[in-house]
Length: 329
Image (cartoon, rainbow, N blue to C red):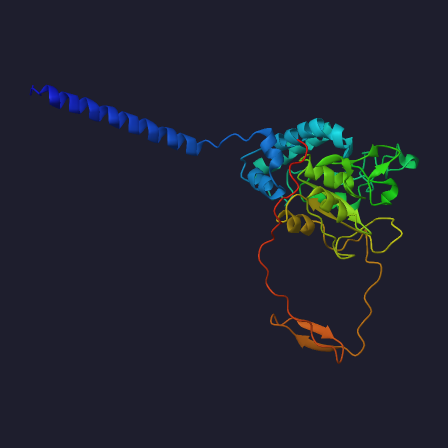
């Protein structure tokens, strides 16, 4: 055996120690990269609808975890704001389990798959109380779903309850004699607007990532503005509306928390339905002429009327920065 000096022995031991330390560090880094970080319940409630659906599709979080987190948030916050007036927690958890099974089967999933939603208490939900904010319908339980409910569920959304509305949706505040008033999540001494105030408050207070609402004179617009979330009124007929409103201009649409979530949510609702034919077909143009756009698609226009300018490409949807502070949590 070859003899080595004390200095050589020390250098060999030091080199071995350095190798071991580096190997352990690299191993820990690799294990950390392979093991996804666990996401807390409060963190799930802060995520947008877009981020939640992406994580659900990648199996980074389960629909049951998402639903449980939002039900816990409802239990914490809803008593102070009174936004969700009917809750079907067991049904929602059952729906979340089915959503996880669908993901496990690797079948096609919708743009709202696994997301908890609540529906405005004006629209019918089969087997779930729908009061329309009126004592006349205090115990009314429909037998069929409204079309907007059917379409949101077809896109994968999971119903967990109903959101507050003024009686028959008539008003720009949200209160009624059945459930009382809904409060603004940023300041409970202030109004949340109406008539989709329950929906806007629930989304702003992180009890839901998205909800539905309706609008005749501002109900998809002023509650989101009061509550610092996103509201967009579709053109009449764009989203089929089975509402019995007195106005043909009444529309339905989504209320998400961020701008990027709005197009996908709205896209799941649009399109004609045999259940709701358009109120009238557009009258034919007098003396139509045919023109073409860049795509080659024919466009009808009347004599003497210039062709409409082709739509210009727009960048991604962006929201203004939050200047409202922090909602209840």
